[in-house]
Image 1 (spheres, rainbow, N blue to C red):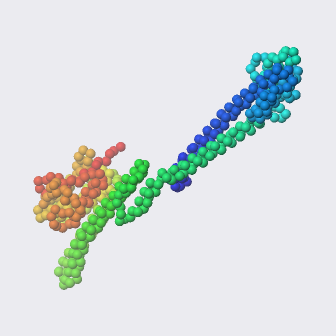
Image 2: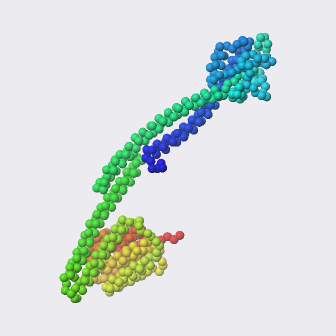
Image 3: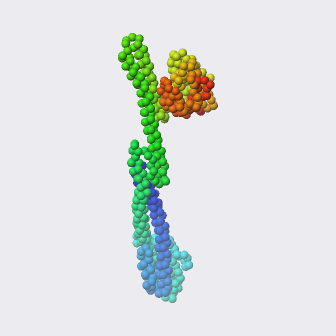
Length: 458
């Protein structure tokens, strides 16, 4: 749910919620510490009252408390403090007649530390302190015990009041912090808002790089967008160039088909018309071949991830490709030879694409071999971690120096038949499979090798 909210809301929640939880924990801890400190202060107040009452008993002989002691009792922290004093032999001297009852406890001895205890007085829980000192009352010396006590509810009321004040202060601080974080995050995100405006201003006709200054954390986004814009521009340029080149290449076959169709229409019936029909069929086949090659090349360019690789023996793929390409080769009375490696050449490939690449290599030899062409041979072999298919002929020939022109789209070394796409498609197929296609040095004719990585076992 939080992932669908605005970035400012997410940052606000991620900052304020942990701080609020921490403030609650600190508040509880601070309340407990304050309560312990308050109890210590209250106990010291009880001790001060007990000492003051014991002193006044000695000074006044038990008749009255001094004004200072009375003020101390009435102004003690945490509410009213009650007292009860007994003289030698337990005679009542001053204070409230009945102190809190503590069953089973004797008065503390003279010189012993003051004794604190919890008790009940008239149905209320109280904190009690007892102190015994030696005094002299009306010429009679002995032990005097002073008992003072205070209602726990009075102490707790003061503690709650202090806690409310602390909670109010913490709440005010949290609200202030929340406001600062909310508007601070909004101010901090302004560069992203401006970046959004810059991106929104872009269109298909304007894919220029974004040069707006942004915080360091957003530079990766800007760099990625600029890289994407650059790739889109390159893709659009490549597509426009392809359309232009394709239209140029299809124009000649289409014109040839139209001319031959008109010639068939106007030819007299008989052998002449039949000859023109054969030429029309051949021209139509050539046009369809060019269109098919254009589609294959563009499919490889646009959808490289659509290639699904499965494990095959390259010998078997090569044999099937040669069987499909053998008919036009043998029809021209050209020798056609296939030599397969003795061992299996397992490769991860899309067999249809590999067959297409090999048929293009054979067709290239058949189309551009010239009148001197008498033989085409196909062989496979293992080279280190690669499986290689080599197509050789004894025709006009190709040099490794011609590689750039030979593998270019719609490129031909010399004017002639063909679309200029066969070798370009074969190289694209090899690259999509992580392989290579190269021209070998040959004393006569042309020699091209398509190498693919051998599949790893295990």
